[in-house]
Length: 499
Image (cartoon, rainbow, N blue to C red):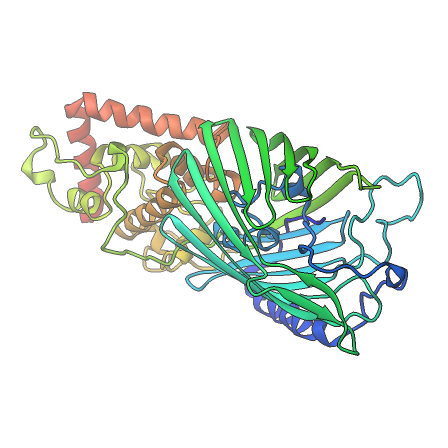
């Protein structure tokens, strides 16, 4: 069993780090004994099994992690889940010695590396009876390299790597996995994984088969009846089993309880699990209590980090826009009371970015009060209050400041203070967030304010982000009910854009 979540590299230094990991990965197969377990060499040779189930979070969800895999350990359950990441992620599972790393490189896609059974012994830190954290399948070494990419509501992913059996004379054998996830609506996601596509036969130096991993086909669903509630299920069609888990999410804290049923053993077997996770400040902690009769150690623990700058889609000033499902961001015909003199840049920009005029003005009002040279205490600047990193990501020229609170207001030097460019870049970024959050306007607004790394794709929205979203929506509604105010602020924006 093993787990998920890792992250922390500066954007400039990410390539050397990834290169080192790739070298490590390619070198693993040649080391026939580097993770070998001499104790396990005395075990009875067993064939026709499944690759061991690994991952603190996935096991805590009773293995119902097919449709909701979304971190560096995703390839262990469904490689398509890597496409959910917009920042680097690093996870180390103490219970299984599983090291997982993933990093998105837009527009190429997200890459991941997983090295399993990394522990030097069968216990974490201390091999003592009082240490509750131990290994469950010591000796089943794996090294996986994965890739995933998002195509609208669909995520596709694949993994390839090597596995070995828990015998000192075991060689490495290649394995191949594929997976997919599809968001049907803000309330339903489905996923599937085909694992060990052609089967895996692990041999020793003499050609004797030590272990065979049979292909597996698993499907899963995630239903979200309420912003705080998630119901996850999975079904393994090859080796009949069913897992289900209910998860309660409240801000950075989530808790779940579930059960797993196996039907392919002749006698139905059941286990249950309890999981808790905490995500805050770019760090994650996962704990699971797993109740299975054949396990000596029932406690699983892993930690993770997120790192690097947020990777947005590189759709700078694209002309073809996502058609939002909600009328809050569907282009609207300007009110007949708006004078023709204002039907210029402001109206054109709103139509270009497929956003209602009322919502566009509301965001500008809450962000900067129509001040094109506004600077926040966090260093965000301009009409749409873009931080330097996001502005550069969307094609604006921004100097590297020693003190970001004292920028150069020359719009030729810092293009955030060019009102036209700032507004266009801000709306492209917002459209990216709207697509990322499945057309959920409230979540997209919250992520615009506090950053997408702090807002889950399916919520809930809490704290400062929630307050910001409500302020924008209140102002938008005010524009809808007060045409004079709408016309006044449109004129203000038109004057700013015409300078």
